[in-house]
Image 1 (cartoon, rainbow, N blue to C red):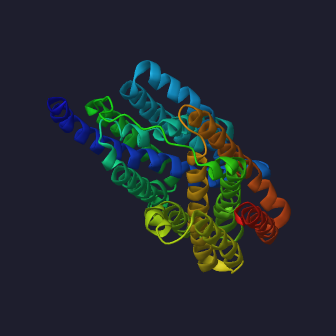
Image 2 (cartoon, helix red, strand yellow; image 1 turned 90 degrees about the vertical axis):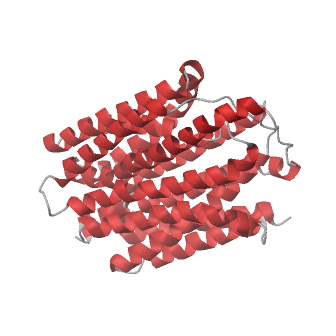
Length: 389
């Protein structure tokens, strides 16, 4: 056993470095489409209601690819699947750049579908990084993968703002640079060596209270994604298309929002030592409420602070809901429970992404915020009802 652990140590260290690097690059391509998708949609779509279609395609293709990704890795192993997914993303980002040059919305959406499928494999990195590692390192490794996700946001969004003004075709150039980065990720996975887990995962004992809260927490997690996507996806449209701000300013707003979604998760463990899950979830809902109210302030500052608060609120609500979902089912039963939860979450995010452009066109920015506030108040009522005991 000791010899086996010593042989595995160098390989697991290399695997950790490869997965952290590829997490940064994989997240960069996904958030780039999240940011640029609505801007490209507005430019290419004849109907404003179709402006957020590329972002909706990204979310839905990621959702549909989750199950096939897990089955392919079960059959062929992680390394060939990770390499193939990175190469698929590289090719599709190149195709997306060509679609922008040709002003072809449907070709762009087809390319985005491939990036979304690669996103389903990126979700598996957090499981792969734990393979061959002692269970005591799991919290530290998961924190590192969260930080890698946050780091990937910066090149994924800021690239468009940096190239704007330097070239008239900044959008295709940015997409081509991201395609090269995905090709480098595929090359990095050549060094990846799959490992058998050295420590068997213990089957968690279900929490009776969490079991009773399963469906309310599924609704809470999906609702958090719904209200967050409802304001995040159309923000570049509102800023660049209606308020005529620069792409650079819009990219800063989205970067701060995405960092606010990931970085607060590092504080959840410390906060749960001082407060209950119900209290932390209530704090998250309060952040969401204040974020929507601040978003009414005109100009760059209102968008920046409002979306940052919405990101923090989403983080606390989603993490606490997911924690209770994970505790609600034991053994093999938990895979089905978590799968249903992820399907509901992706469906809610996809609906918000697909309809937010039409809602912005029909209701205006204030009307969209009123709708978001109503949904947040509904989530507050649900949380009060299920946690008051």
